[in-house]
Length: 164
Image (cartoon, rainbow, N blue to C red):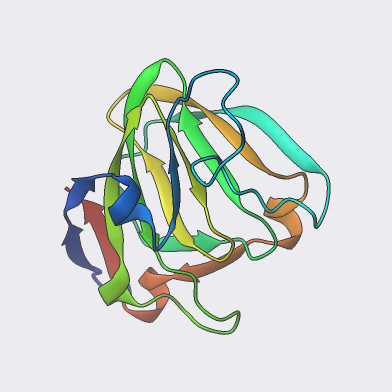
C-alpha cells in the first residue's frame, strides 16, 4: 500500500554573500589582474583529479525528496547564458548525521555568478523554470561515485519539498 507524502513549501530568497555563508561562497566577476583574495573560490580539490565540465539539465520542477552532499571536495556551480536558478541547501553535518529540516534554505542564484559549496554541504538542485539549462560544474572526477551521500526525506519523513 502506497502512502501519501506530505508537502512542505520552502520559500526561496535571493542569494547574497552573507546569507549563503553557512553553505558556501557566492562568487562574482572581478577585474582581471586582481590578486587572489578571500572573495575568490576557496577550492578543496586535493582528494583526486578535478573535473570541470558543462552539464545540461532538463526542467524537473521544484519538488525534491532527496538531498545530497560531498565530503571530499568543494563543488562550484553556475549557469550559462545568464539564466537564474534555484538550489536548496543545508549546512554541513558530521559524516554519520542527516540534514536538519529546520536548517534547510532555498536560494535564487542569478545567472551572473556562481556558488562554491563547502565540503559536506547538503544540496538539492539546481532547479529552474526553463526547458533546460547548461551549468558549469567543478568537482572531482569521481565525486558522484565515491563521495555521494544522499538522504531521502521521502523514506524517513514521507516528505516532499517544493521551492516557492
